[in-house]
Length: 115
Picture (tube, rainbow, N blue to C red):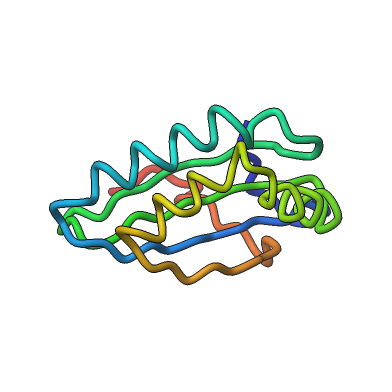
Protein backbone atom coordinates (compact mmCIF):
# COMPACT_ATOMS: atom_id res chain seq x y z
CA UNK A 1 0.00 0.00 0.00
CA UNK A 2 1.37 3.39 -0.96
CA UNK A 3 2.42 5.41 2.07
CA UNK A 4 3.09 9.09 1.68
CA UNK A 5 4.34 10.22 5.05
CA UNK A 6 7.37 11.91 6.53
CA UNK A 7 10.14 10.04 8.35
CA UNK A 8 9.27 6.52 7.19
CA UNK A 9 12.75 5.70 5.93
CA UNK A 10 11.17 4.62 2.64
CA UNK A 11 12.66 5.68 -0.65
CA UNK A 12 10.46 6.83 -3.53
CA UNK A 13 11.40 6.50 -7.17
CA UNK A 14 9.65 8.90 -9.50
CA UNK A 15 10.31 8.12 -13.13
CA UNK A 16 8.92 10.46 -15.75
CA UNK A 17 8.76 8.90 -19.21
CA UNK A 18 8.33 10.99 -22.34
CA UNK A 19 6.51 9.20 -25.12
CA UNK A 20 4.66 9.89 -28.36
CA UNK A 21 0.93 10.00 -27.64
CA UNK A 22 0.39 7.05 -29.96
CA UNK A 23 2.66 4.96 -27.71
CA UNK A 24 1.40 6.09 -24.31
CA UNK A 25 -0.93 3.14 -23.69
CA UNK A 26 1.70 0.67 -24.92
CA UNK A 27 4.17 2.14 -22.42
CA UNK A 28 1.62 1.88 -19.59
CA UNK A 29 1.01 -1.74 -20.57
CA UNK A 30 4.74 -2.60 -20.63
CA UNK A 31 5.38 -0.97 -17.26
CA UNK A 32 2.35 -2.70 -15.75
CA UNK A 33 3.48 -6.10 -17.08
CA UNK A 34 7.03 -5.56 -15.84
CA UNK A 35 5.88 -4.50 -12.39
CA UNK A 36 3.41 -7.32 -12.08
CA UNK A 37 5.74 -10.02 -13.42
CA UNK A 38 9.10 -9.12 -11.93
CA UNK A 39 9.10 -6.18 -9.55
CA UNK A 40 6.20 -6.59 -7.14
CA UNK A 41 7.67 -9.70 -5.51
CA UNK A 42 11.13 -8.21 -4.96
CA UNK A 43 12.26 -7.92 -1.32
CA UNK A 44 11.61 -4.42 -0.02
CA UNK A 45 9.11 -3.41 -2.71
CA UNK A 46 6.14 -1.58 -1.20
CA UNK A 47 4.05 -0.25 -4.07
CA UNK A 48 3.97 1.43 -7.44
CA UNK A 49 1.50 3.70 -9.19
CA UNK A 50 1.32 4.54 -12.87
CA UNK A 51 0.06 7.92 -14.02
CA UNK A 52 -0.53 9.07 -17.58
CA UNK A 53 -0.68 12.68 -18.69
CA UNK A 54 -3.91 13.88 -20.22
CA UNK A 55 -2.03 15.16 -23.28
CA UNK A 56 -0.59 11.69 -23.96
CA UNK A 57 3.08 12.70 -23.88
CA UNK A 58 4.12 11.48 -20.43
CA UNK A 59 3.83 8.47 -18.16
CA UNK A 60 4.98 8.79 -14.57
CA UNK A 61 5.69 5.87 -12.31
CA UNK A 62 5.79 6.38 -8.57
CA UNK A 63 7.40 3.46 -6.76
CA UNK A 64 8.22 2.95 -3.11
CA UNK A 65 10.88 0.74 -1.54
CA UNK A 66 11.69 0.06 2.10
CA UNK A 67 15.24 1.37 1.68
CA UNK A 68 17.88 2.49 -0.80
CA UNK A 69 19.55 -0.90 -0.33
CA UNK A 70 16.38 -2.75 -1.35
CA UNK A 71 16.11 -0.61 -4.47
CA UNK A 72 19.78 -1.16 -5.30
CA UNK A 73 19.22 -4.91 -5.05
CA UNK A 74 16.36 -4.52 -7.53
CA UNK A 75 18.65 -2.50 -9.82
CA UNK A 76 21.20 -5.32 -9.82
CA UNK A 77 18.37 -7.72 -10.69
CA UNK A 78 17.72 -5.75 -13.89
CA UNK A 79 20.61 -7.66 -15.46
CA UNK A 80 18.44 -10.78 -15.17
CA UNK A 81 17.24 -11.88 -18.63
CA UNK A 82 13.70 -12.21 -17.26
CA UNK A 83 13.44 -8.45 -16.68
CA UNK A 84 15.76 -6.96 -19.29
CA UNK A 85 13.26 -7.40 -22.17
CA UNK A 86 10.95 -4.97 -20.39
CA UNK A 87 13.69 -2.38 -20.15
CA UNK A 88 14.48 -2.79 -23.85
CA UNK A 89 10.78 -2.46 -24.75
CA UNK A 90 10.45 0.74 -22.72
CA UNK A 91 13.59 2.32 -24.16
CA UNK A 92 12.42 1.52 -27.69
CA UNK A 93 9.42 3.86 -27.36
CA UNK A 94 10.26 6.31 -24.56
CA UNK A 95 12.98 8.21 -22.81
CA UNK A 96 12.89 8.71 -19.09
CA UNK A 97 14.18 10.89 -16.31
CA UNK A 98 14.52 8.87 -13.09
CA UNK A 99 14.78 10.32 -9.60
CA UNK A 100 15.07 8.98 -6.05
CA UNK A 101 13.27 10.92 -3.33
CA UNK A 102 12.30 11.01 0.33
CA UNK A 103 9.05 12.59 1.49
CA UNK A 104 10.00 16.00 2.88
CA UNK A 105 6.58 17.31 3.88
CA UNK A 106 2.96 16.25 3.52
CA UNK A 107 0.10 18.75 3.32
CA UNK A 108 -3.45 17.59 3.90
CA UNK A 109 -6.51 19.44 2.64
CA UNK A 110 -8.33 22.10 4.64
CA UNK A 111 -9.09 21.26 8.25
CA UNK A 112 -12.33 23.24 8.07
CA UNK A 113 -15.11 22.73 5.56
CA UNK A 114 -14.85 25.14 2.63
CA UNK A 115 -17.30 28.01 2.72
